[in-house]
Image (spheres, rainbow, N blue to C red):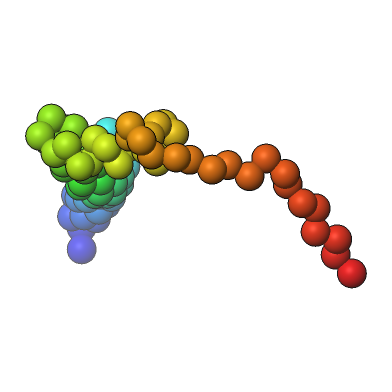
Length: 100
């Protein structure tokens, strides 16, 4: 192998190593691609959770607009309201239970 061939071979190896380094570690390289794929998966999970929450809220809105029984249930259980003629008994005494 002549000196020219050795130099050309060394330059070829060096260029190959530089290109591999750039492919893996540059701004748009394989390492960034992996990070972006992970972010994409995380965002997809968040989107699914948001869609599920949206469906729940839409169902609640439909119930509040159209279902009188649902409205009565919320008024009674969440706001402590009663229908006319309905009696509500509340226990004001809280007994303390002694532990042995």
